[in-house]
Image (cartoon, rainbow, N blue to C red; front, side, top):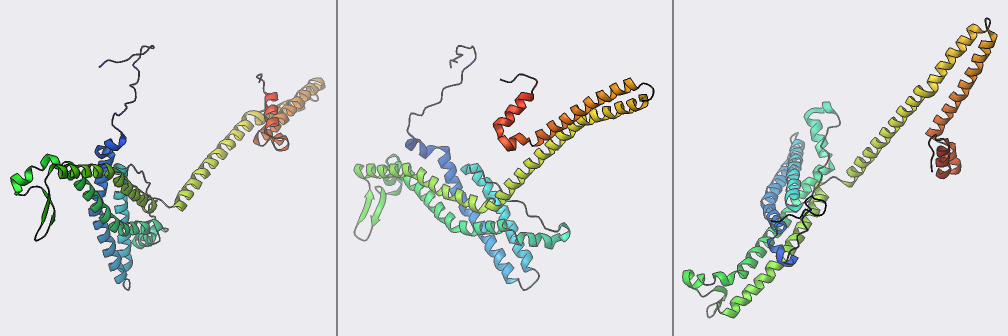
Length: 343
């Protein structure tokens, strides 16, 4: 295969591949269609297991509610529903490309509460009850989608390929073709060329329509998983608020460190030097008044510089010009004090 190195001497990326067949003809054999079909087929056995678990544990827990065992049994049912929910989220991610985040883990309010603390935490968890509802709701829907998807695939491909295996009926089973109708007096078979071609045409229509029907059913499953097995809107909002609060706290901490650094390296250092200069001037006040006066004058200059640095620091925290005259004037003020020329 020839490689195009282009004008710069490096291999160029291959051009995007264009399919010659339209999407409607590619869809029946695409991996996405068969992943959706596999998802719908697996839904029935998984939903049967989940429905059986939910009905058994809830019924047993409610029946034993008059005793001490009822609440732990209910909590056990909720815990099992959460495990099944994790399996369903994984299955949806692998087969339906639906990346659904799991709910927050159940945590007892009192860590020293032991087993009963865990039981109460599960019983008060809204996400756990939504998982339990999912195991109940999914069962009838899974029965419908399992039957419909299997019937569509089997009927469509069997009719489409009927001309290829129609000869097997008279050879192996002793009948001219697929039996459509039968009573005491009449038997109708798909045996002549027109009927065989018509059956194949009907099969082609079903095969072409099946991917869109499968994707529609898979979309409903995806919505069901996201609405019942994902985090609630309140939990998402709380998580976002906690994240925003973390950003604000980090920003405030960075500002405090900057202010501390500016005070330590700027005004504080000048004030320490000022105290030393004034101490030296005090010692020379009687011996050499002129030198002491000069040192006091220099200290006065240091005081002005320190005051200016404190003003700059306060202006950096919240410039008064920003409040009084807006962002444009504040930026112009900063640019005017900058030692580097600003265009």
